Image 1 (spheres, rainbow, N blue to C red):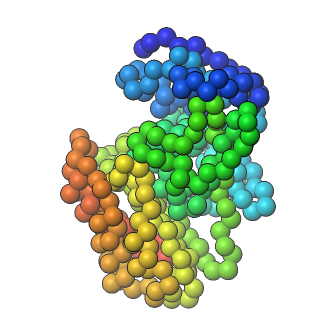
Image 2: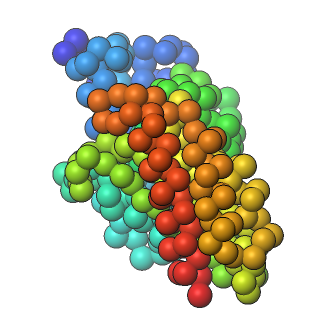
Length: 286
């Protein structure tokens, strides 16, 4: 592994000072579970890493005006033990993330910044309309996650910015809302996704008032299946509607063949698990 400098600022101001030259070779470091692997493989070649682990301003989870705010340096292990976590899809994704040792270091912000098409936390965050708070010496900006992700390992984050927090808006209280997540891998734990599906359903009696469907590992970045959503939104819940939505979701994908699965298999599994997750999530809203 090539040499690099490791900076360990204690404050957010100091961390931003280190990134202020806007040098792409100086990279922020959250948990490091992706970054160190990338350096060893040669995919990343930073000259300096700015560790965020000791920056107190970037740790913790809180609610403010109904919005759930997750600090960028909060580990997945800390996230899973938080008593105020009500989003089942997000909890399921975090619980199935790698293994306990990795969750003790890994952060949601790190998973977002890695921008992997198979990133476990990204589909649940997409269906929850998550926003990314980016901070630099010049100010703060909020970016919707769907706009933050550009492609494999590509985001809109500038080199002088850090992800300060992930913000999840409060769910509307008017109707029952439920979320769900499923990850298909080659084994039950510690596996990269073959596909992943996140669903958010809001019901009004026997009608689907609103729906979000997000897919992972089947396109250059995690995507919303907006065509599949449109088939269901405002319609009565029915088996035929679920099947049609799942069929369209499979068409909206752009999967590839790789060592884990073929593109055709991924499309077939998207059709199976979109329908299954819609049904399971609907039943949870009863």
